[in-house]
Image 1 (tube, rainbow, N blue to C red):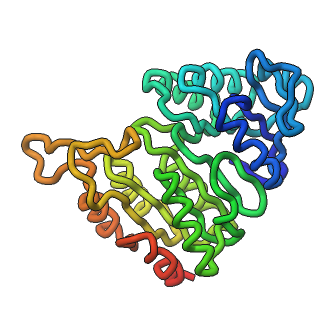
Image 2 (spheres, helix red, strand yellow):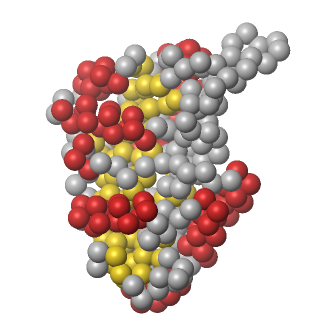
Length: 294
């Protein structure tokens, strides 16, 4: 994994609405957007970025690409990601919402087979403050520093980053892994990356209701991670049985024979506390908890 200002970036789905909006913002932040891909728009340009019909054509004209950011519609996302992998790109940020589960399973298998880092879908991407913006993070909320953020929630990532910035705590990197039930990279994968990252001193993990990703992350932190972790779980007042926006943010009905309901805030907080991890009751508590470890 390498996300620095030197990254050479491709944007697939550059003429889709999110691409048109965010590519100029990414370029203005300093991200080296070398080319865009959008079938049928080859030969055109967006904000000075040349557009090609296919990934291979783009690479032939601008040279090697480190990272592809994909804004393509759900029904085109699988083909776009597979095209990038086939062209040798090994870091893919898939921001698209609503990608079919069967497509994701196929894509994740191909990413694993080719040792490709797949972030998303349904995510805001990655920002390394002061260096590179790969996605939809509002960069004005971030400042360079030593707090790493890994989150299932897009907007909470921004809110927590702004709170840290206002408290004088800059961020080393912030990544939204996505809130769907099936996602590419996991909490464990990013916890390991942040644990090995020299620029990161403290890790903030932002979870949500639904699934058991946070419980598995808590066990992983207790067993493997050396750096301090502060956790926050969103959804304290969410009604059970209702999807709360993301496909993964739903508290399942209680299976027969189980004492606790799967996916609840209570179950996740209990897992973190059992692992000895500091848990914030609300986002505004996170800066004070982070300061205890610095």
